[in-house]
Length: 171
Ligand SMILES: [Zn+2]
Image (cartoon, rainbow, N blue to C red):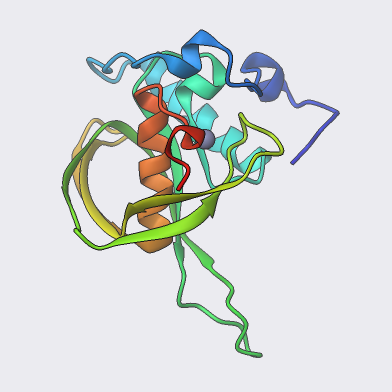
């Protein structure tokens, strides 16, 4: 994560780094349609997520009251030639107005962290697998299934859109 030499995008969308900010506790507004401004924002938030070298970033973390988040999905079974896990990037995309359609009864506990809560980590229990529906950057409806780490990424982000932080859910 870059701590200084902020890029133009990082200056345009300052990252909130403490919980005591109302927008982090706001139920964000549904996006009524993808306008050129929204499409630009979606590209910007994806780029910002990469700049911060992070796996997820939600609009309220950068002062934007939209139900929009950037997420990465990784191949958690991938290993390098020595057999070490590599977790290659499979995909990264923006989810607009996401909704959980179904989730497994089976759950999983793992440590989470958040760009907006530096120095805090903690175990959070979440469903092992989920199916979500969302709108993509082209305003197309998408159905997406995710398991384990990838489900966790999406659910952590969806919580942000409802003003929920992982510290509310510590196991
Ligand atoms: Zn977070």
